[in-house]
Amino acid sequence: MLVRNCAGGVVFHGDKVFLLMNEKGEWVLPKGAIKNGDLTAEVALKRVKEEGGVDAQIVSSAGNTSYEFFSVTRQKPVCNKITWYLMKASDPNYKISKDEDFQDGGFFDINDAMEKITYSQDKSLVNLCFKKYKELQ
Image 1 (spheres, rainbow, N blue to C red):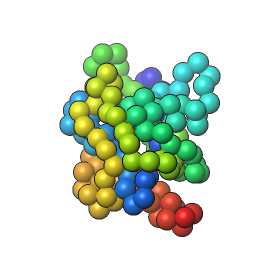
Image 2: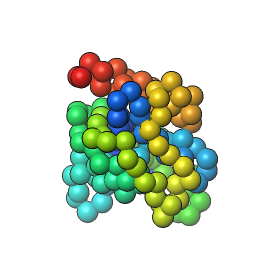
Image 3: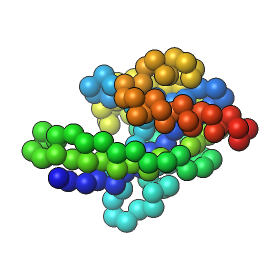
Image 4: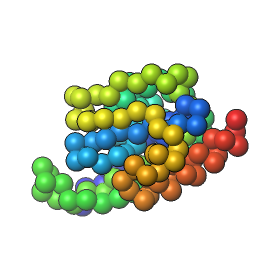
């Protein structure tokens, strides 16, 4: 099994959280693989900017998740281990990257976001991050 270390961001602006719709129609959070010894926090900020065009700052760490899937292109199972950061966007502007195969996205009210998010693991993460975000404000 191929194990990939990744990093991503749970980005808030006001009471809204940033989500992306991938090429499979799944609502997900911005994230990407850590390569070439890059720092986890830098990768998370970079993926938020590259995938969603969002300028964000890290507020705190948000924990770790992992999931497994079969990669058709690699013809082997893959385990993505993701380090997450709670982030705050200075403004609500975004630009979804079609180059990264995202179909849609934006900042969504927390209740709408919880209905949209595809994976229960991501729902739990967003829920915990929203509580922490509100406490820190």
